[in-house]
Length: 376
Image 1: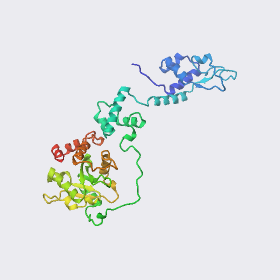
Image 2: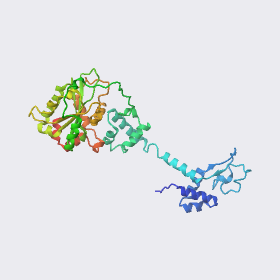
Image 3: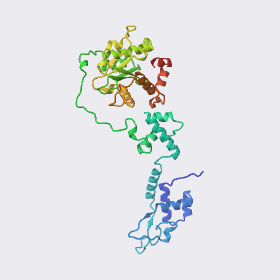
Image 4: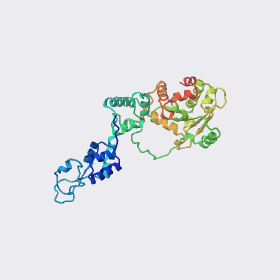
């Protein structure tokens, strides 16, 4: 196999110098370690037309080596009526660099393989999968990186477009015409359960599991809502359909969770909950204390008003849930079984943050499969 080499700027300068001193082509080629044909093509390909006027007839001397007027005794003769050429090493190098960059653009793949990858990406995105998930699930077929596939999408090479991807479209400017506070919140005593109290607690208990709790949010005419409950360390989420949400329904959610896995497992798995100031989350005592034993089963803390970034993980998860529950669409036609199936789908997605493992894999590895099965 031939060992192809690119000419460097210094080698091009050597070629220009050799032409100026009327060196033979084979001598220049031998000095640089290249085939004479390569040197000949280099000069002819990169020579520059420096003709002043409309002379368009080539001199016989420029139809053969050295293909330029350098070294010709008539190059400064105004009576010369032929097209004049010169070889500029610096300009030749600049041109070669541009050609090299352009040659590396585009898709380094044959048409059949490209069509196969295009079909896999299209079907995956239609199934609400991320490019990362599609790549992991088809790693035996897709030999391109996630970054490369995103570049194919952005360049318009694939059938899938940017607007087909989640969050790729331009966001609308948010309305900030008014702030609001739930009227039910005005008389709630959250002493010992504020965000500052939360920071103090986790400082004294480093490494403790903190779950984040929130509602997805629905249209005003819906009677139901989606409850998001996430353990950020493992990207593990539990979602549930709450009909006509209120304090009692949230307490019922946690009581059922305790019954499923047992009080001891509940205390180990869910020691701390961080949520917002939604009125449905304000029955602190009923959430924190077990009806089975009467003892404390978890700690509950509230974020400050209007500071959603204090619980960013559940906010980000709600974005992902929008793939299944689009904004402006009703969720009243979903059943609890539908929500359970979507939950399982989310837990089986391979995640880059977990080194291609799913949230289910991470949960089972940290806890055990028996606990997972009790939850689902």
